[in-house]
Length: 229
Length: 303
Image (cartoon, rainbow over all chains, first blue to last red; front, side):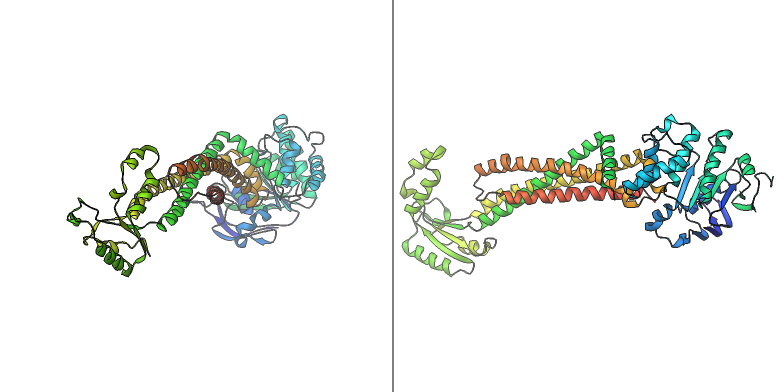
């Protein structure tokens, strides 16, 4: 599903590569933790998958497409198959829960009938039933992240990228978030989650890819967070 | 494509930047109106030139009795000289038509031109014998008058050769300056409008960077992301265009028609040319808006 082959990314005005000859394969339906200290290249990895950045060398395939040969014109179609969740939720403050989720479908031109059908379903999937008409500032951090997950998942993407989704949330609430991610993963969606949260990684017992200074230092199925330290 | 979604976005954008929107509308309106006035003056001048250049002629005044002009040497033109001059004029290459105006005719024309109004006294004091006789020479090409004038100057029996075109040209020279002035102001204003629109769109894009960020993330196409911004530009451009159209109609009624009453323009600027000027300025206005929006968005909404 995601295939990195010897990928190097150096940001302009920086000498040290953000990713240094990284090769990794993520299969369909896998759940992968991307761990490592800040600046180790986790976010760069996610940005490369979205084609928000281009690698300096190496090849990236996402959902069977060679990103180097994907024209800018087709990048939006790639992104429709990838959902994204961030540490800071990125909800629209002037839209309620339902509208925030529906927005993701409106802007890709889905018919209203379809939106009215699937949005309540996905709001229920993330555990926010009955809160569809709340505004983001009336929700807790955990609930806001659920809205963000609903928005990321509402178009049934093949891949869900999560960049420290529990970074702003207390550990007890994080468990609920992870349950939702696990539920999404069980529908067959590939999940890649960058995180610092050792407790979550240890409890989930999923594949762990550890980055350090842009290099993969560990890739282990059913791994834990701290093994390399 | 969901039109109501785009339009609600456009409406939000216009309302959020209300002051900038108003600035854009006014600048576009004034710029387009100046451009339109310039074009209308242009059309009017072209029409008038066509009208007048068909009618301008050389006036070859013959020596009257006791003429003060040195070329006459105090002698009145003789019948033989008149006949010879007429034959010579008719034989010239650039001449289309020669008419002889005798004293009676000249007097009639003079009375017609000055017999009423402020010059009435002058007209009454003038007698038929005071009028000079002249040839009215119509040229094949009014622009190519020099050879004819040169050939006539200094000939016996001719007191003066005047070219009406010189008189008309002074007037056209003034109109030409007006036209280029209006066009210069219009170009500056159109440029200002383009920059203002660019700025407004940039503000709009900045105001909505959250929305556009999410749109990009969930895979909205560039068209879908950019269309609301471009539409904002187009709508403010159109509003400006409508105001400019009103200004042009007002200018046509209160400026061109009034001026035409004082000057013998010979031809009226018709409503059809006003309509085509309005259409042209609208098209230019909207085109500039779209262009300015797109150029700005290319820089601020990269994929």
